[in-house]
Length: 74
Ligand code: FES
Image (cartoon, rainbow, N blue to C red):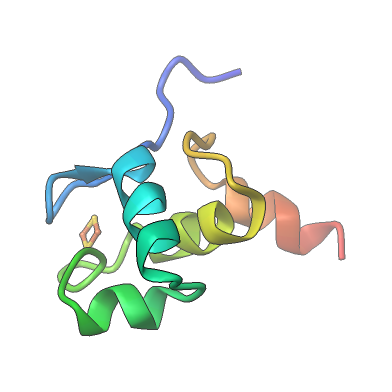
């Protein structure tokens, strides 16, 4: 396991725990809804697949590239 986990949207300086809480409060279920509020994921976009996984699984820390593993097994 890597020592480094992806746990935040760096561009907006918000960790996934905070984003998850906000999404739950707002009833958001997609990255697009978070982007429409300019809450996260509006700049480089590197966090988007992780935020999608967070919304799907509820997890807030991911191995770098974790979304590749999830798509390979399907
Ligand atoms: S890390 Fe989220 S938009 Fe850049």
